[in-house]
Length: 341
Image (tube, rainbow, N blue to C red; front, side, top):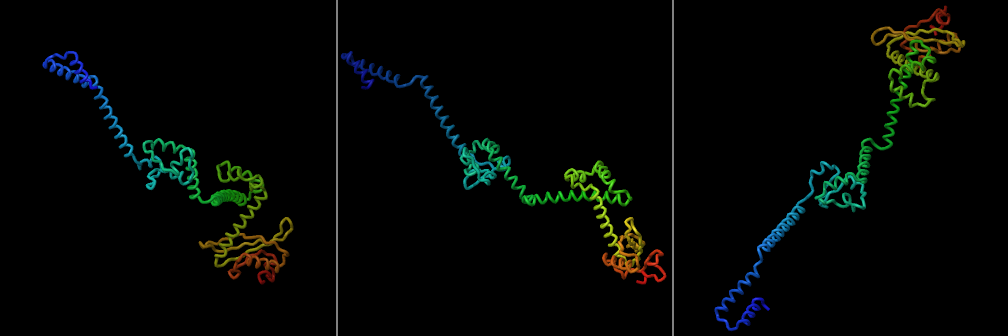
């Protein structure tokens, strides 16, 4: 039943004999009551208006949130801070090019950054920092650096060969220093077998780093400071000096030869040979070249020794223009046997 009809019926039942004016008053009263019932109170109105505005603000925030989320995208400037970052247009997401190259992904990340693109642009910086510090990323970076280094320096064999070449160079520099010490002693007629060690110690203490490093690295039986090594150094210096003199002698247009026979402490007959020529500067020079052992001291033996020596050293006998000997009969006796031969 309608509330208005209920109240109207109630009033009519209580006073059925009222006039029309009473009926009119009752209608006016009923209309006022209905109006008071349908219209909310001022407090209610304010509450309704507040809820309406709140709904409008919430709707506006959700719309702006959706618009902001959809408008976020990959920022190219991120690659300046994270050099491993790359964007794949086909997947519309970001990858780690270092980890992706190695093809190893983490199960807890579902393969993100490696096999699965990263698209959470809202937390991009935070996630990028986390990935940069992850173990898999650090291992991938180390492997990439090792591969790049190997590519620049060559294979393992090439690296070992390079190290071996550097080691050889250092060893040669040290041996060169030892030979120069031997040459120093020999030129000044200082006993080399007894003074070599002390000379080496003096040079090392003065800052010969190559020689010092060689002696520290070498084994105790391979330091090349023994008497046997010194003798070999002297022989090597002798061969080097002889080759230098022979080179100059071969360049001369003419030369003279001088020789003398003697006996050493072991009673071995020996022949010392000297040459005299004019060098490239036009100055006469004279050098001792060798000592040749003799089987006998007769003229024929001495002559054969001289000829064989010049042939062995590749000295042209046709350039010989003079000879010098002492007063021995085999050299310059009555019949000048050696010169005649």
